[in-house]
Length: 137
Image (cartoon, rainbow, N blue to C red):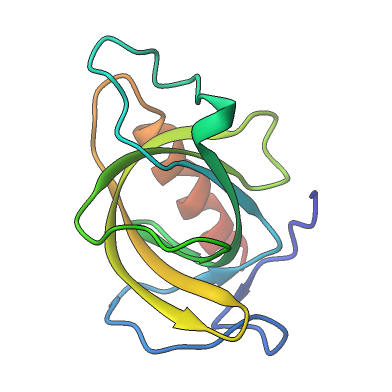
């Protein structure tokens, strides 16, 4: 998807739920791909195994995390690799994430993930992209 119309808050068309983040959030029709199992230590973080990858709709974005809608539940406290596409960026961001919460909803599963600072990921580029989107909002 390439919709990069970012706004503050949570759009009415997206699933709603409580969260504990203190950061401003952006809403966008963006996508994430989460690797359902932790990667092997020697694996390339930019490559996610297709058979282990779950495509997700992003509900909202902040510098430190994402809220997602997934077809399958994710285990709380698991550390997973993710790719996040913001639409206006040329490539997806490879990120290490931690599942903070997961709960069932009509739309599927609402999942809160925290973006972790990690070597060999696009963490700094991600922080830049979100800061730029916030400043333009």
